[in-house]
Amino acid sequence: MNTTLCLPPSTLLERSFPRTTKTLLETYATPAYQGYQLEAWVFDDEAERQATETAFKEAGINACLHSAYKPLVHFFLEAFSWASVQSVVIEYPVLAHAPRRFLLEAYPLAALLPQGVSLRWEGVETTPAATATVHYRVQVERRGKGWETHLVTAPNRHHQDHVGEAQYSPCGWLWLTSPQGEVSETRLETDYEALFQAAMATLASTQWQSAPPYFEELNFTVHWPSRDRRLAWDDEHISLSEAMHEELYFSALEYFQRRAGLALGDRSIQPGQIVPEVSTQGETAYLQISLRPLAVFSAERDEVTLENAQQAIGTAQIKPFMAALGGQALYATTRSGRAVEARYHVGSDRAVVISAGQHANETSGVVGALRAAQQLCREPGAHFVISPLENPDGYALQHRLIATQPRHMHHAARYTAFGNDLQSQPLGRPFEYAIREQAVEVSGAELHINLHGYPAHEWTRPLNGYVPRGFEMWTIPKGFFLILRHQPGWEAAAKQLVDTVTRQLAQVPGLVAFNATQIDLFETHAGALTFPVVNGFPYLLSEDPDQLTPLMLITEYPDETVTGDAFVQAHTAQMATVITAYHAFQTLSLNR
Image (cartoon, rainbow, N blue to C red):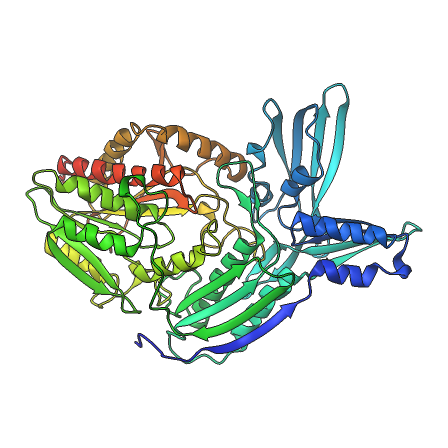
């Protein structure tokens, strides 16, 4: 397998896309349409849509422009008054193949209600036609005024996606009503949709080499002028630019999975590093697709105090921390040549492997692992391997991407520079996964504590069915979640470990209440949890005969994008899990 291709930068596509709002004005703000009423659903922010309405009004046309993305949430944000509201009943479409899809699109509406307002959801079975929109029906009770009804349109279209799968996705839409009352409606291909389709068409028409990796860096540079909108709930915001990053990254990954004859979601695919860089600059949508060399140099992060770190720490700060821990140094390397370092601290206890940074946009585990290792080093008999940053190539990319979009999830930084999940790398190779093989070999550890995170706000793919394919369980936060995987014969020990760890974590101030709040909102929009909860913590227990250690405890803290005090809370929970699980494992009954 080639590790680098050393290709010079080359451009596969460079194109601008007329802003849909401007195209609508050019087409319909003319004398021929004076007296008409126009309604359009576009992927753009409120300021641009309002400016377009004003321009139409000056041309003698009554226009209303809605958001095609999360239309119900935008209705309540932009066109609804909460004055004197007592209760709200919302009827939402129920699709046979995705019954809660439109409840998810309404997230986090249930958390945005004023105090004292009740909300009830009622599902209505819907079989939408290929050329018709679906609707939410909103019934509102106001004090002293009785009930009122609003119909909120949610334009969607049936289509086959870039890998031939059937989808029902949000789309642009246009209604025109003539002065005589004649109504016409049609799908409107927006700039947002056109940009994405151009990107996928370019991948399909490019002549790739026969075997992966196909490139070093596949770069999508996107200028998307629509501004993000923060919501008055937790870390939530509405961001078309973030959604475009997610669409381009995962759609490109899926394209190469299919091209290689692999199943969708197969994490062993190694196309190379896929990097969407989506900014909000400019006034017109712009896309450049280029092949670039791997970025082997990266800017450093500011040095911080570990215990109070408000954001991800830099690799330059990790290195002296590791040296101060002492012990035997273990090394692997990455595709770009960056070092993956672990330290083996020998002791009389049962050995434990502690790792973080497998998915490098999940940054709280890196700090939590280092804090835990510092504490364990002070305990007599401590016996562990610490590998705090398993994916330094992805970590460097995450830092590069947050320089322009600090509030985005940046899943492009999730995998290695090969484009694969390091856990899917073959055994016996010199790359990232080798650090785990070395850790288990030198220590004989039977427990691996693997620190992870997931999005702290909603994760969507609006151009391909809305809900992220393969990650449906992680589309909205549901608290600090634990996964315990075990080899055959270790189920009883795994159950003991989950019970002990969660009982101890319940003592961490605020953590159970944090979980309860997120789970309540999750269940409102995504349905009842389909996995158990013990001591206030959701968890999954499963058997995995192929993992390196008999037990693997995986943390899932909603940390992607959080900073400040929320980040401190995240890495404190990660640290507490390591310390608790380490000590619980020492007394665990291992009658297998």
